[in-house]
Length: 188
Image (cartoon, rainbow, N blue to C red):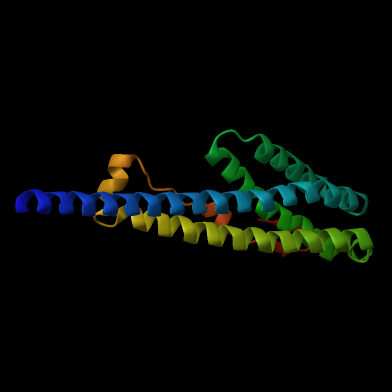
């Protein structure tokens, strides 16, 4: 009789621990998905601002057409990128190229004084800051989730129930370079 009670208590404690572990993993995974969606909201906002900024810039910076064309092409790649890696790579390159278009404004005093350009570049800069913060929060949340999955005994529960670690975005070496302004030319 006592052995039966001990076994029942062990089973109940085990079920409670398993349930808590599972629920904690579900909460963390949902937080990661939420943060990923927050990054997407900011990326969408940037995608909506870019065509307007290009139109305003186009009139002033005619010889910078290659930069403007590159932005249009990258924007298209990001929007139709099917593979996560492909879209991420295009988005990171777009991020660097958007900085170029903002730097173009510094080279043209009349463009810099244009109210539409000022408003759009201000909104774009603000959006870039929001993207950066959203990515940081996503990375923090994903890291917390990944750490929880790796802890013992949660790692056993996670493995059995199919929870997998989430890869964090990593920049390529050429994407880590800053933008240099040299004369009238912009370089990445």
